[in-house]
Amino acid sequence: MEAARLQQQLAGLGGDAEVRRLPMSLGSLVQDNVRAIETALGRRYTLDTVSCEAGSGMVEGDPHALGIVLVELAEWVATYHGGAAGSMRIEIEEREDSIRLLVTDDGQGLSATQRAALPDPTGPGLGLASAFGVIEQHDGRTLVDSVIGRGTTFHIEFPTGTKDEEAAAARRGTETILVVEDEEPIRRWVQVTLEALGYTVLTARNGGDAAALLRERRHELDLLIIDAVLPGISGLELIAETLTVNPKKKVLLMTGYSADRVGSEVLQQVPLLEKPFTPAELVDWVNQLLDAS
Image 1: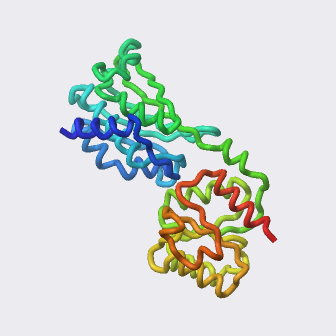
Image 2 (image 1 turned 180 degrees about the vertical axis):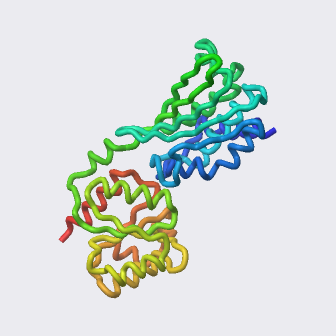
Image 3 (image 1 turned 135 degrees about the vertical axis):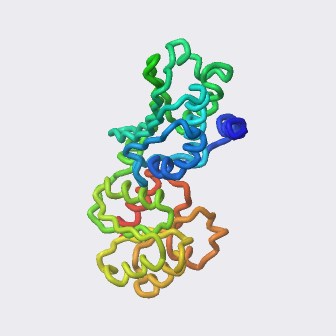
């Protein structure tokens, strides 16, 4: 059964296995998993999403692991309520120092005793203990609000990393930075992080768009942050062409590969920022490059 398969995956993720910590959007996570969530709910339950636009709710996490958690919650809603008709709502709340993912149903609700027993695999949680474990691995916490006859809300809270960003910000920027990255969650995360520090950030999702921006606004750009692998013109080709025109242009190369695997002459000319990286690591490199004479 699908529920059993999900619980097996969650058991592995919620044990000693480490989850990936990548920049990601909770809004995009919800959108990417809508079909799977609706399938888990079944035909008698409807799904509503609120403030779950792609790119919203930026956190660091494992999209695969958290996607399974969402589907498992939907499985719980459908199973615990015995197939009765109803609705489930997923909402994102962005706060100053955290982001909350609210999962609410209008089912029969839980008593205080049942809420306390949710982490028990044999209790009303029906295996949610593994899902809670995955959330804890993301430095998150789960609060459960429920009233008999009025449904249940899971408040899943994640830190935003704001303190790390502030600690890393030895300077506030006024410069203009071009970020070239084909993965929307990473591109958006880098943009938001740098704009919060005062930088003007332009973005491109492929080498062709980036090349056009470089032709039009080359003299406005103080720093280029470019992913190595891009659709069309690769990041390495883009950097090589840029440095041919202006050897002094400040460039930071991003990649999920090690320097050995990238294996390019470009690495002799530009620094490498390996994914996944933290806000502090990103800002530290940006500060170093822009402060260099």
